[in-house]
Length: 120
Ligand code: ADP
Picture 1 (tube, rainbow, N blue to C red):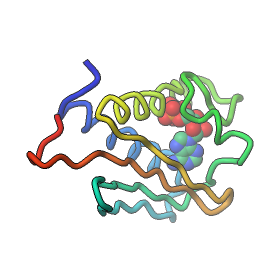
Picture 2 (cartoon, protein in one colour):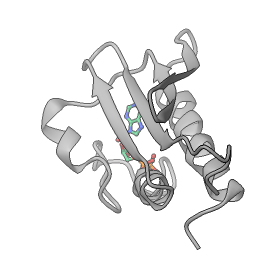
Picture 3 (cartoon, rainbow, N blue to C red):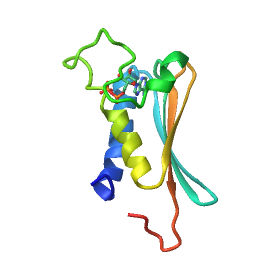
Picture 4 (cartoon, rainbow, N blue to C red):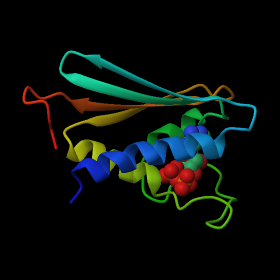
């Protein structure tokens, strides 16, 4: 249920959607694809507000939102990142975040490379 091409697509749509949503119009969103032995790495980087250090351990929890004052109408549900983590792990991968508050953040998804060329 949590695996397959549609789920992989949702991982990246969520990350790109967040990057665009939280970055001001004069900011920048960039994608990078890379690999290291055994892993494919896809990163989404933005120049938005970043995420405070105290919130980082919770950011992948269901319904967790940094700005609690915003409600579902003017923001999101707080579910996107929990799905990103669940779907990444269902593919044998993981997601990491690096953030410098005030200068944006980078989410990196690691997916295992398989010898057969597919891991779906
Ligand atoms: P939401 O639907 O609220 O965007 P998510 O699970 O996708 O829910 O994200 C959880 C919280 O993480 C968001 O409410 C926001 O506070 C923070 N967040 C996610 N992505 C970013 C980002 N690129 N820049 C700054 N904050 C972010």
